[in-house]
Length: 272
Image (tube, rainbow, N blue to C red; front, side, top):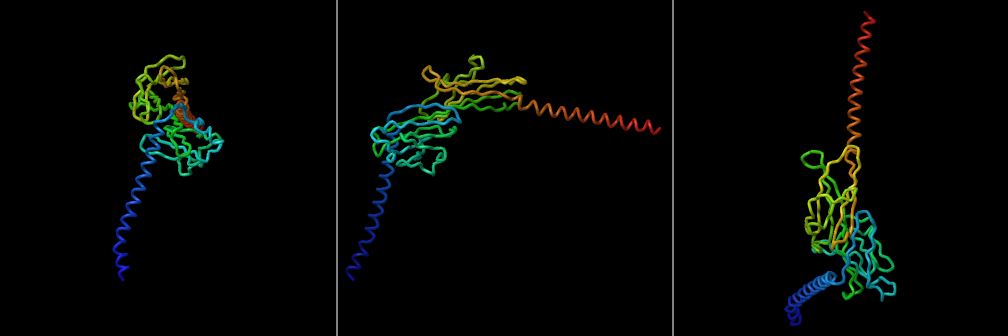
C-alpha cells in the first residue's frame, strides 16, 4: 500500500519531466533546422537566370568525396525567407513538394527542374550530410514578359517585364531593366521598381494594324546583360479576323435582304 502511494505521488512529477523533455527536444530540433538554413544563406552562392518554360540544372559542388553517391544529399528551397521546403532528403525526392513531378536528381547530385515557371524562383541549397561547411547555394531568377490592355480602352497595350527572384537578395536599380525595339533602340519604360521578390518595369505601346512587333526586355547587373526575354505583339492579328467576320456578316445580311426585296417586287410585277 505504501509503495502504491509512493508511486502515485511520484507520477505527476514524471509526467511533467517527460513533457519538459519533449518541449526541449522540439525546440532543439527547430533551432538546429534554423541554424542549418541560416548556413545555407551565408555559404557559397551563385546566380542562375532563365525564362519560363526552360529546363534547368542546379549544381551541387560539394560531392567530390561522395564516390558518386547521393544518399546523404539534401536539397532545400526557400522563396521569400518565410518558409523552407525540403525538395530532396537523403537522396530521395520528396513527393509532397509542389515541384516533385518536375524534379530529377542526377548522378552528380545536381537538381533538375523541368519546364520552370515563375513560382520556381528562389534560393536552393544543396547539403552533404549534416555539415554546412560545403553548402552549395543557388539563386534561381526567372524573367518574364506579360501583356494587358490599358484600362482607358484607348487601344494601347502595357507590357510588364518581371524578374522573379529570391526575396530581397538583390535590389533592382532604376536602370536594371531595359526595353528595346526590333532595331535595338532603347525605349522609355517606367524604370525598374523593387517589390521584394520581384523587379518590375512597364512599357506602354500602340499596336499597328496587321503588324507584328517584337519587344525585348533585358535585366542588367554590373553593366552586364544577365538575361533577356522577348515578346511579339499580335494584338491586331487576334482582333482583326473577328472584326472582319462581323463586317462580312453585316454585308451578307444587307445583300440577302436586298435580294429578298427584289424577288418579292418581281413576283408582284409578274402577278400584275
